[in-house]
Length: 89
Image 1 (cartoon, rainbow, N blue to C red):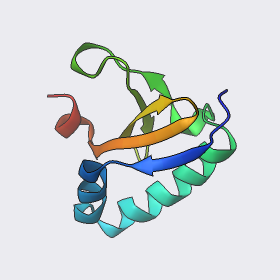
Image 2: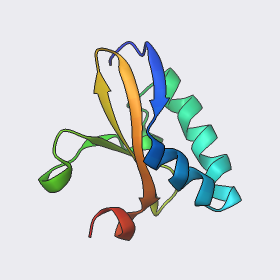
Image 3: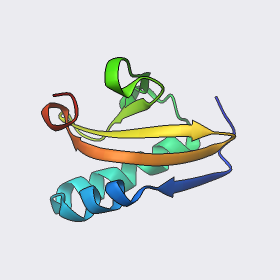
Image 4: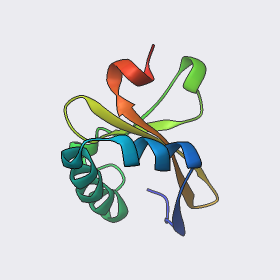
């Protein structure tokens, strides 16, 4: 588990979050709190991505919604938010 220095949000992520349904906004806040305590909590299903998104990681927000993030020197940057089908075309 890495020591989180800070959490940032890309412009794309901010737009994705703003456009998402209210229940997803609430779910993301709850999952972010869990993430800050334990990045590998089973609810998050935190895993490394492959293919076009190699080098990024994904966490579950709901059954179908995911947040994709990168980590560099303890700085977490949430990059993209969307449904499984939106993100993995």
